[in-house]
Structure formats: structure tokens, C-alpha cells
Amino acid sequence: ELQPKVVIVIFGATGDLAKRKLFPSIYRLYQSGKISKNFAVVGLARRPWTDEVLRENVTKSINEAISPEEDLEEFTSHFYYQPFDVTDESSYNGLHMLINDLEGTYQTEGNRVFYLAMAPDFFGTIANKLKEYGLKESAGWSRLVIEKPFGRDLESAKVLNKELRAAFDEQQIYRIDHYLGKEMVQNIEVIRFANGIFEHLWNNRFISNIQITSSETLGVEERARYYDHSGAARDMVQNHILQMVALLAMEPPISLTTEEIRSEKIKVLRALRNMDPEQVGDFFVRGQYDSGDMKGEAVQGYRDEAEELATSNTETFVAGKLLIDNYRFAGVPIYIRTGKRMAEKSTKIVIEFKDIPMNLYFKKDNDRHPNLLIINIQPNEGITLCLNAKKSGNGALSEPIQLAYNHNAVSGINTPEAYEKLLYDCMVGDATNFTHWDEVALSWEFVDTILDVWSKNTADFPNYKSGSMGPDAADELLAKDGFHWWSI
Ligand code: BG6
View 1 (tube, rainbow, N blue to C red):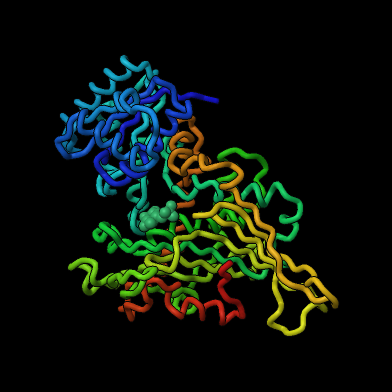
View 2 (view 1 turned 45 degrees about the vertical axis):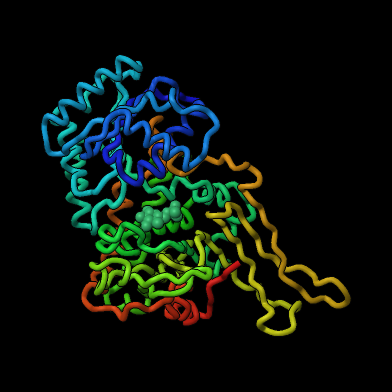
């Protein structure tokens, strides 16, 4: 296995993402030997921290995330901090000198990752200044990792992309979608294409509908400023959910290269039907959480979470019906839903197969149990196949049974976290599980239509209780087509 040598520069090192995800991920890569001792991390942010303060914070974040047994001193000694002003030339010059120093000390062969884990306003500026002041010139490679949000609509995403591309080539840009690092999201492709028994049925002749649910129990937390400008469609649908749709509907790639896989995903997004604005009301439902009860604890509604949210029209829930106009999937609805403050934290995909032409083995019509393939993404990882088998005793009636595979139990608790895998992929130059610009653009095009219609009128919010599965209209969306959300 490759053991990259690298200096990782984190813009936004005092922020939440660095603390919750990046520091623990780097530690796990170090601990498992995936990065060599030839690495250093430079933390940048506005605050006047020192190396010592950064190291204490790194230690704290790792202890909270994984409570390791060993002493972290050797590990954290690779971390350095520099106060940074993204618009100021001397900040970049200082960074340049520090990187040069560290490349000498740690023999990292000039390989550099610039990780932008901060408010998106300065993504373009930073990328261009890195180029202007020569920070991306080195004896090794330079890569830019961009966190979401990648713009707030197609127009702004284009502007941002243009700015980034003025400084970095497409092959150097790694747009993170952390769902693509999740074990079971990566498994969609393998389950589909490594099994003869699914792929032959994976089309509109045998699948009646697909349901993707990504529900969260948390509310807006401390992110009111970001979230209220975003909302669930931008925060979850444009990226994570549409990426899962692409993986579920794509054709088998001719090989497992980055280009082949990405181009199959892009084809799906191109076939995703863009609604007429008049249809948005029939195909999409928005919601915002009200106060309610989360497992016995009373919680407040979205509009009461912060003063500036008092009259907010931002959606914290989205449900929708997607159609893919291609030969394989024409006519198969893909229902999606995602939201905050829902009954449980869970991401799962249900593939519902069509009824067989004649079934003698049940008494009443509602005893009918279609075959389901359920891909559990989180918190449980695994797959469940729902079949019908004979009820024991006399007669020949069927009853539903489940075959379940629990991935966590098989691979142990040490399955790498999404960020850990993606960071490693970036360091070895594998962009397969990062989003290509074309995917970003097509996803925005789809979501823009919906947001545009929604922005033109005020919603009747709040419309779902905290602790529920969203507004009633999300159930009606399926009921209109004769389906219901499966909760298995
Ligand atoms: C992020 C969103 O991209 O994904 C958050 O900005 C959301 O609002 C999070 O909570 C969900 O990720 P996960 O991995 O917890 O499902």
C-alpha cells in the first residue's frame, strides 16, 4: 500500500470540521500506518493560536472521538499553527516559508494538500493566492480539497469553479462529498455489479420504486447562519442524495477508473428529469420543524432556535419524486426524503420490486409483501433482503422473512470513517469518490428549479413536529402513486 509523504495545510483549523472529523481522521491514518512519519499538518485560521494551543486542541479532539490508548505527543508534534488572514500577502509568504521548512524537516518530497475547511466566501481567493504566491509550485504534487457548499446555485457554482480552475487543474481539485466515503455508499456499486441476482432485475421491468431516506435527529445546532441560507435542498439533496441516486441508477462501468465511473454517474444526472416549474408542487414537498418531543425531551421549533430565524422560510425537510429518463429506469419513481429533527438518525435505501404476476399464497390483498432490498448506510451498515416463505403449519400461506447481513459485525468497529478514506484517496491521487464539476453543475441545475419556485412564495411553516417523519404531504407524495415509505 502506498504511504504518502505530505504536508497537509488546513484552512479553518479552529473550526468544527477540523475538530470533529479531520484531526481524528489524520490520526487514524497515522495509527494504521497509512501515512508515514513523513508528514506535517499546518493549521491556519484567524485566531492567534500557537503550535501548543493547536496541539492541545488536536489531542482533545482525538480523545473525544476515539479515546486512543497511546500517548499522542509524538503524533501532535507534527502539527503547526499559523494565524492567517486570507487576503493578506504576508500570511501567504509566512505559510510558504513554514512549508519549506517542514518539507526539509519531514522529507515530504514537496507533496502538498491544501484543505479548505472554512466558510466558502474565500475559496476562490485562497486558490488564486496560493498560485500567485507560488505555494503550489514544488518538487511534488499539489492538490486542493474543497468542502461544501460548492456555490449556492448553478450560477455561483460556475463562478467559483472558474476561479478555482484559474489556479488549479480539474485533476488537482478534490470536491468532497463525504457520503462518497461511507462504506455502504461505496458498497452500492459492488452489491449491484458483483451479483448476478440483482443486476438482471435492476430496471423498470422489475423495480417498482426506490426510496432514499436520510433522516437526522439534530436540529440546526450552532449553524443557524450557514443553515438558514442553505436549507435542506442545498445542504443534503444537491450533493449527498443526488450522489446516491447516481450510484443507484448508473450503468456498470467498463472499468474501475475514475473517468469511467464518473462518466456513468454523469450520464444518470443528465437523464434526471428537470421538472417544469408548474410541476414542482406535485413532485416536491418542503417542511420546517415545529417544537416537539424527541424521545421524551421537549425541543423547540426551528423559528425559536435563534432570533434571526423567527420568520425564516427555510426548509429543514425535503421530500421528492425523481424520474430518470433513460432506457433502464424510465417510469421508476425514486422517492427521496431528508430532514432535521426527525424521529431517528438513519440513512437507508429501499429498492421495492414489482409484484409477481400471480400470487396464490396470501389471503387478503394487504398480506402482500413485495420483495425489498434494503441498503442500510447508517447507523447500521448492511443489507437486508425481504422475501416470502411458507408459514409453518398446514396450508401454503406465505409470510415475510428477512435475510440480513450486518456489515459492522463482520468488519468490526474499525471500519474507517468517511473522511479518513477520502483524505487517503486524495493523498494517493484517486479522485473517484470526489465529485466532478459536471456532477456539481447538473445537480445544481436540478435543485435550482425547485428552489426557484419555492423562493417565490412563502411556505406554510412550521409543518412537522420535531420527532416525526416529516409533514403529511411527504406520505401523500407516495400514496398518490399507490406506495408508502417502508420503515424496516
Ligand atoms: C452535512 C450537512 O453535509 O451532512 C449537515 O451539512 C448534515 O447538515 C450532515 O448534518 C449529515 O452527515 P452524516 O454523515 O451525519 O449523515
